[in-house]
Length: 293
Image 1 (cartoon, rainbow, N blue to C red):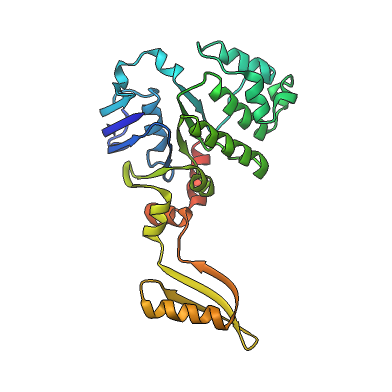
Image 2 (cartoon, rainbow, N blue to C red; image 1 turned 180 degrees about the vertical axis):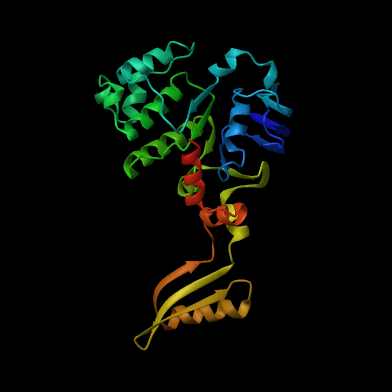
């Protein structure tokens, strides 16, 4: 869907490049996660893919066509949901969606989309009366009204309760299963883990990791199993190296001969990988992003 080769970009007032020669591709029908701390180049890269910034070096192609050659019809093929919901607050939710839908040639069923995110019953409310979570869900509806081939989602579940977050994640998966392609940025690593087929980490304008979440967790994790067990009424913990034959035998003997409380693999989490790769905690990165907004 997208192919990026040796992309470089420097803002006019900056001496240093924000994007420093990154290359990656986004396959059709995949959910591609783009992760990194504040100031790493995530937003700049996204704006370049969306043609909201010009003056980059390198090459970006969309469906095999140089993005610089694409006209306004390019926007018929994509849908965008930014982190900060932007709507006309003095109009109803339905009026908002109708207004934006009239900008496109392809048109999805508004009722079906609003029902899918639980907003149809509130379609005639002014957006000013919507909660933040409702505005976020309305954002997603707006991103889908032109039946796009590709979605750009920025922090799509931020501010949603677990129930509505799950509804939204199911919508994203269904969109992908129907052939859609998704570019997603988020600080909620559980969402990335559940949704993404591949993820890229960008740090200081360079991509430092790009792989499937499972492959990253195996690479950065330990091939070990930790067991909490009871012996003679006391609780103990033991760790076993799964690369060693003797260690595997000891694990088997322990399971057979003792009461087991819990067993944990040494697989790490995407949150731990984020910290290792970027050197920044997710909370600090999220705080910096909010400060920048």
